[in-house]
Structures are given as structure tokens and as C-alpha cells.
Length: 347
Image (tube, rainbow, N blue to C red):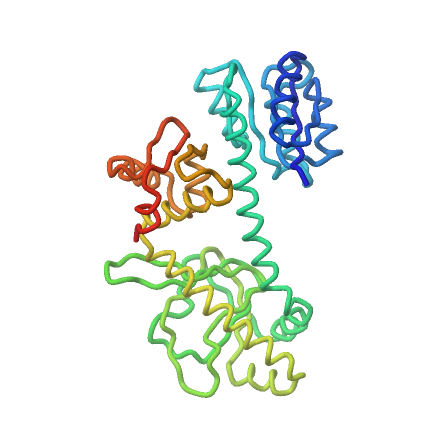
């Protein structure tokens, strides 16, 4: 099924020309001749992406984006501005409001299509990740509520922000359920760098899940804000599991495995080089956009950094290094892969 694009443009000639460009590129196009009509259309059809002029009567493009950002059904829709205004302050204003891209008129047909494909690719990547996480949790969501209710019967303990709940070497004889607050588990590498392994919020539970032997914690657990925890002695947790249906014990085993795997994945990400994260993200976009290996792809630096999970400054430095090495060619927001094999082999 073709993607739905909503085009909001008050100039009839520009609107009809752009509509034709998008339709020839395989998109289902809906149009609106002003901002007020565009907001109504967006709520009605829920497009996959919105292309919107800035300067319009009744309601300008900034107001359209602001309005749609306040609605639960439309706040995540990718949004691209079209404008004849090229002042940096105008562009910054649009991006600060949450726009995904900003094209200045007159624009090249390829620039528009590349911008749209990049936005849709980013949305698809992030949606796939969300669906994977949801699938992983659905298998035990029905029984997990009952288990949490049982844990809420245990005594509470208050922790100030920044408090250490446990640290490496402490005896792991308690289990924890968060009533309120946020907790991080983390390790320190040989260079003193803090590596976060997991984050836990309200109704999450954490702690060492080994019951049959004396164990010590091998990481820190620290509160990120004022936190209230239900503290469950392991011996009591073991009794609770033994006295309940066997499936509950299976749930705990699955959760324990899930937490361990998540921590290992996060550690791998933390230790992985910025260069490899950047390279893998470029390759991911290239695969999603299904571009020829040597053709340019349009990707904003903020999108690359967000998907790669690194700071924009680090990503920009890495791209500059790739450019010097002859791996990529960069012109504005366009990135052309010159040496695909080298990008794949970056460690």
C-alpha cells in the first residue's frame, strides 16, 4: 500500500506541481490550501508524512505544526517545511518546534523525494524497534500484573536521589519493586567510565535472580530521583513463587533472562565504537531506503545520531573522518557511500 502524504500549500501552482511530483513517485497525495484545512485533513486521514508551506493565511506552518504536536493521534507524524524564507532563525524556529526537515523554495524534485524517503525510513526503523520490544513483553503481560500486586504487599523503603541501593560485592539477598521513581543499574570500566546497563521505572522490578546459592552483586544500582522501593527478601520471594501457580515461576525465569540479555546488549552498545555505530546506522538507512550503493541518500545529522544513540557532535566528527578516509562524500545533508565494503568492515 502506498504511503499517504498530506501537502499543505496555499499557492495553487506550487501545490499542483508538487502533488504531481509526489504522485509520480508512487505516493497517495492529499492536499489542503491553507493551514486550518490542513489540520482538519491531518486529523481525518492520519497521513504517513506531512509537507507544509510556512507562510500561509489564517494559520501559518508553524501554527499547524504546533497544533498537530498537541494531538495524541498526530504528534508523531513526520513533518517537512517548505518555505522561501532562508534565514537561519526561521529554519531554527521550525526545527525547534519539532519539524523533521526544512526545504527552501525553489527546491529540486530529488531533494524533496529524498527528504520524504529519509523521514519515512526513520519512522519505519523506530516503529520496528518499538514493535520488537512490545512483542517481547506481551508473552507475560497478563500474568505480570498479578505478580506485581503480590510484590506490592512487602514493606517500602525511601531513597533520596543519587542514593546507592547496592554496589559490586554486596550480598544479593533482596529483590526490589519500584513504587515511585527511577533507578539505573551501571558498571564502571577500567577507565572509570560509567556504563548504564538498565533503567527501571515505576512497577519495574530488579535485583539478582539467583536463588540456590549465595551471590554478590556485580554492578551498582543507583536512584536517579527520589524513589520508593518495595524491598523483598529473597527467601520470601522464593516462598511466594513456590506457593503460586507454576507458570508464575516460568514468568520470573523469562524476565530474568530478558533482563540479562538486555544488559548484555546495552553493554555491547556502550563498548562499541562511535565509528561502528555511525557506519551501521548509515548502512541501516541505506538498506531501508533501498538505494543504489553509490547513490546519494539524504539523512539529517540529528536523525543519524538519534538512531545510532550517540551525540550529534560525535557523529559529525566521525562523518568528517569517514570523508577524509574516502569512505563517504558529504554535501549538505546528502551522504554518498564511496566505499561500501570499508563502511561494512568498520569495527
